[in-house]
Image (cartoon, rainbow, N blue to C red; front, side):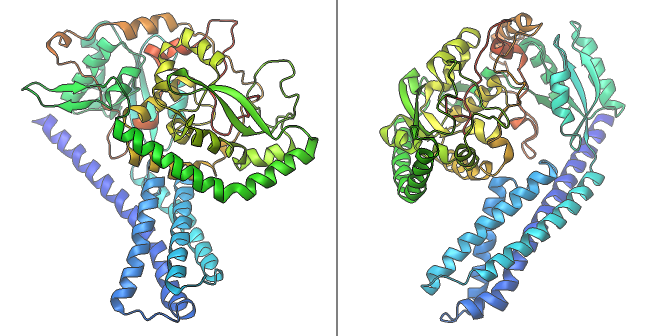
Amino acid sequence: MERNVHEEKLRRMEAFKRLINLGLSFLSLGLVVGIFAYFWFFHFQHSLVETLHFYKNGHILEISIYAVVLFAFSKMYGGTRLGYLKNSEIIFSQIFATAIADVFIYGELSLMAFQLFYSGFFFWMFAIQAVTLIIYTSIANKLYRMMFPPRKLLLLHGERDTEAICSKFESRKDKYRITRKEKVSPDMQYNYKVISESYQSGECNAVVIWDVSTEDRNKLLKFCYAKSIRVYIMPKITDVIMTGAEELHVFDSPLLLTREYSLTMEQRFLKRLMDVVCALILLILTSPIMLITAILIKLYDGGPVLYKQVRCTIGQKEFQILKFRSMRTDAEKDGKARLAAKNDDRITPVGRVIRACRIDELPQLINILKGDMSFIGPRPERPDIIAQYLEVMPEFVYRMKVKAGLAGFAQVYGKYNTTPYDKLKLDLTYIENYSVWLDVKLMMLTLKVLFLPDSTEGVDAEQITALREEKFGKQARENERMPEDEEAAEGENMQAPENGEPAEGEAAQEAENGEPAEGEAVQEPEGREVQKPDESGEGDGQE
């Protein structure tokens, strides 16, 4: 009875938290729409649409269209995720979504009036909207944090050092705080006792399970689920694969299907059609930029305009990837491939500009038309780099179940220094959950990523491309290969544990650094170098 009262109290608190979150987010959108409504009634309607006559319903319709477009892009870019994203990320997302909505409405009104609008009012409107968003979001986010302090976490871990995972949570002090760390004991009753005592005393209100064998993880998850305790789990490769499983109802037992192929025939057709159409349109629109870039590169040092390199796409098929050359012609005179570092002196002045704007990637539109690549997919890698990774991370081959892409899931949700293993899990998330809408969404999200510093920044000078084997790598691999718990034989094993509450999406994008059970396979034995996988905008290949 006491537990039911406690659970009901927590449920009400979460509902109240969600209500406040929605209220603050919609008020932010309301302020932006209100500014647009003011400019519509006092400027656009009279000064810019003199030839059109709007009645009451027409005004409502126009403002409603703007509101819907603004909400759609704010939702897509994370502008409504107050309390989840960092304050700076929310502000950037809201301003970016507002800019797109303003451009959309500008185009729509220009079409209605059969002429281009005077853009001065739109610039003023956007400036006011941006300042309003900065001030309001900063205040709202601070208020939200005061009302709802960081979630207190109990970290249940295995043999590995916890510094890596703690540093990740430490980067979000506004959202998480690890109040207790406990190594998982062979005595499962002791682990249950630790969880119960920490939860009932208020020392923690959620559990993080990290670097734990599959068998122990399942037992801990079931215990927490039975007690209605929130759990964060760093997914393993098999967990990611199961997220895309199809649920079948062919008899009275649940049945999940993972197909032998990643995309259906219809999906492959639509994806290829979208690639060809979009590539042709972009080639036409960007052809002046590409011509100017080619001339500048040639005039600077007289070297070749394009850089070609062998990469691998679906089924490890090799092809020549094309990029505008952004480095000196002798950037790899020693024959070794290296990632571009911050302030790398091998990058030419022209190269620095085109890399920052991602113009160096435009020739890959030709690769897309040829069928070597797609717009969205895992970034292509060199054959020798793939061979090295397959020796220590056999799962790396999974990302070549689809065509390589100009941009991908890992580039949108990862960072420039995200570990190769974590990027593999992100790419698998895309492969196993593919849809045409997901491609469209990632294309739109890529626009936002282009303006973020992390997306074009190089690695630190001291950051070597080698990954070294950690102390407990062998033990971690053994943990991954351990059998499921005693109920697995009865078909009750949990294949895809939850990664946190969907409403907040905490664990979905917080892949752990060097995930234990399989992640150590990424680490290369001491003394051997492994090139980090390529990232969109991080090198010409020779870099």
